[in-house]
Amino acid sequence: MKDALAGEESLAQTFAEKMQREARIKLRLEDSVAVNKRYATVFAGLKLNTEHNSALVELLLFLLRRTIFAAVVVFLPEAPLVAAMIMLATSLCVLAFTIVEQPWKDPAINKLAVINEAFIHGFLVVAMGCSGVEHLDSQSNELFGWGIIVFVCLMMHVNVVFMMAEAYKHV
Picture 1 (cartoon, rainbow, N blue to C red):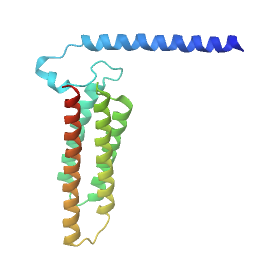
Picture 2: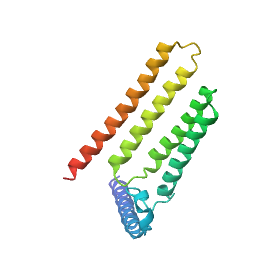
Picture 3: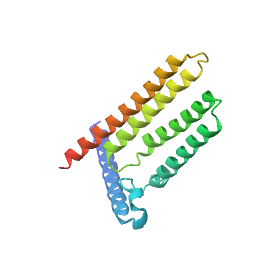
Picture 4: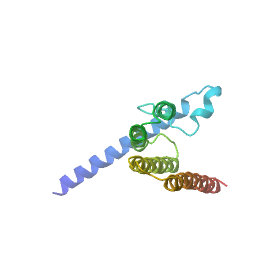
């Protein structure tokens, strides 16, 4: 029995050592990635050498999401439910990518990105629920508009407070 436990501990220790070696190699490779100075700010804070090239995928997802949003606003003004469903699907994809890949070097930034995506996803769920209501009077529409403004201001406030707290840690 003791031999089996000792063998399992040895196996676990070997596995942990292997993972540490791989992590050190990845960090060395990431430090050796050369980014053109012209584009360096685009990749600031992103992990540059990952298995799935998450830095590039993050940028492409950002661009694709903005393009889809613009297309939805321009081409689907008469179908708010369809527009909300499309935006909900893109939000879910970006949220899943952010959780699985964790594309940022700083774990705190990854958490903030997940929180932001969760807020956006929740907002889109509420917007989709309200878009199904056909007979909203002007007062309800105005209230919903103010709700959107409050929501955006809340998200901005959370991000600013988070960034200030992170900056304070580095002082």
